[in-house]
Image (cartoon, rainbow over all chains, first blue to last red; front, side, top):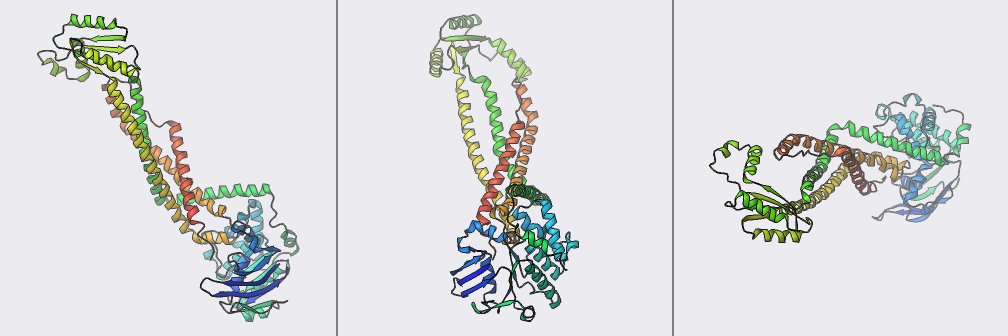
Length: 221
Length: 327
């Protein structure tokens, strides 16, 4: 589903974020990426959603070489990928419903379909009764779940999460991870960057470890 | 927390990006409606800023429009005097009534003169007395200060050179004190009007550029204020067109509102001027009425405002939206 082939990323000032990373992630996999901050976890995720392009090597997503996608193709590519951010990145002046509906509005769904899908996604993360609430009135864990609902509402094939439990206590973190596992069980490829080794090592999924931009463990299943 | 059955989402999982064109079109239309309504409510939710923007645009559009309306009125006024060039022959004081009528006869027999009208000094005095309101002053005069007047219409009123030649010839005629070709002041008026039109055009161009810049800046500020939202929309796959749409509508609403204000300002000024203008017209024995913008003119103004709004927004959006990329 996702494959990196000797991918390197060097920033202008000579800092290497990724060095010769080669890794394959299968269709039904849930994979954790771990490493210290600055090890390249985020860069890896950003490349998959084309926020970043490799300096060398190539990235394939769902059989497509990302180098062949021009600037105009980026939005369409991103619509097929759900993303959960550490700081949620919700629209604070819109309701929970509107936030979750955003990807569907962008994709041009009919409003009845939007309502149906948004409620299904909110139900899935257990926030169906908060659809009229504003994000600031929610707890951190609830906000993160709104972010997850937004990421999955468009039924993407790939779900990326950058430190999704970074600001959550252990119990909430476990709940969020369980949600990701459920999505993975229905066929979504899930890629989670996290440095919470204690949590992720309990979950028995493949763990890719990066150190200073190099892949040091987990390149094979 | 626990989700529903897992088989349903899997079945639909494959259909995620396969929406039909019809549904796509409906969604597109829907987003237009949504953007238009959302932009409108944002404009209305900030009445202070919006009113100020509307007023600035309104004044900038009202100035050239008002001047243009004024020029139209003047040209409407001059049209009625435009065609037959007329030569006024003021006769010398010592010319008698009879001599003056003989002269008129003499003139009317000439082939290059179509028509003449004799206004005797007594008639002129009467007319002046009724129109000017200086009756008392005139009564106190010992003698009539006005000369006899013969109004001469040349046969070919469009031939300017011929009219000038005729005037020169009549000027040297015995008994004629002064021959004045009335076309001269019309020509002066016409060239003044042409100058006026050019000035209005120059002012209009400058102000339109001003309106574009004002709108561009207003939209730029709106974009700055919603930077985080733009980043998020781009992150979840919003195209540039999708991000652009609400800002274009914001520009449109500002422009349309500005056009509306401009129309109101012009109508208000005309209403303010109507009374003194018709007083003045009455003094000149004219049925002249101030002509306003009219419904079509007002509509054009609003459409022009809307188009300027769109263009200004487009300028700002083209410059600033591309810069905003998720980091």
